[in-house]
Length: 593
Image (tube, rainbow, N blue to C red; front, side, top):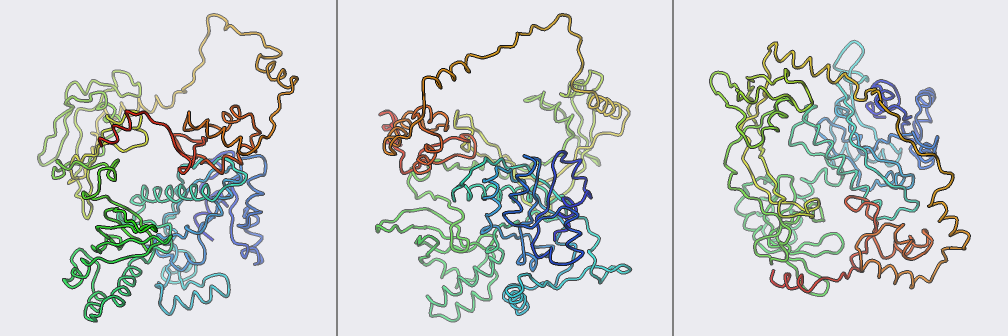
């Protein structure tokens, strides 16, 4: 059982009731945990439940809301890989939680326990070794894995069964809104599952450096990618063994370390045009250029072979396992293929910039002086930033009085950037207009980060008085009682409103929604989508005068339901049914392009 999740959700160790008031948590765990005496009573006392569909559904439907179920997405396979430097999680085939969330309309909240893998020291067993095969065989028979681990004792810190004294930090991300769907489709489940995986990865990348994890560490939500290095080596080795008669070249590949410098024999082989077969019977051919930093295969000059015998140029692709993960169009491709691909302007790529962390009050003052000189940087034995005289008289944007001015001088604490490559980008969306919310603008590199600095305020009485004033300001209530000079005009309550009268009139006249033939309703929907691309279900019901459930059955066949902004909760036709009319001028513009 996860120590971090048990402490956070089954106990009040982290103050769950104060952090999330009004929510009652339940921790879902394996059914086998309830077979052991005393342990069963302990976990029942803390509110744990079995990780089954029935138990989770019962908890989510209790009390008409206010319930949360914590699920540890992992199992026996992750237990064998629980090492401090491993951040892999099997999520590709685990989509049951997404289906349950859609059925009950329960929001998904990603969370990650930093330091969980460091609580015990486990004997590493790489995949393919004898020990790993022995553990996997035991897992297939008993249902759980037998990791070989040790912790600390009561009176010693080197050996025992107690966990090490390491901090375990539970970081909770933003909730993913989920709308209730009685019968979710596979596409809806996959879309929600993908959102959760992306949110969990972003949560890890955002907070990993705060808990001592290297910046280049990667969090994988797919187990088959965890040993990608060995997989790629085996893949190319088998390819060489079956397509090359030279045993020397095969031995060269087995001994090579996949870096930027490849042996001449391997480079010569990579320049050959070869064919690959991917998932979904996709067949591509191209030149094997090497491997990216994450040991994925890079194929250039790639052609995709269609079933009708035609080929389509797709530029450069990166293959992970047996599927394409990224595609990058090349200059040889047609202009139509390169539409929407934003080129990055690199004129200032060699310019060195400093990455500086500044206090909030100073950032607010700079924001008010946009486009103006805010101060001078004096570089000597100490690096000091001296603000302009006009800057020191500007109060913060939080509403402080004029006596609360920013300090005149700030010290810069410089630190070098080791083994890190960072750059500053800018994005120009001035020419996109209404498409600015969904498309990427013009990207430009403003410089390469060469120094990292922290702007520290001076230890002076003026600064302390400013901070005291800000603290007092935050403590003041936002809502205040005001004395009204005259009485507010209030309208008398109405027994029945005009909308209610119209609704009752329709009921008396016998206005009912009668199911029409599917073809008739389908034609009406196609005609409606010719006028507008997106519709809500209520609007389509008014247009067709059909029952909502019957209309939804037909919409599922011909349309897609959007669950993400900017058209959330709206329907649009599937790509195979779209045939929107366009002006002749637009067609002429396309021909010119």
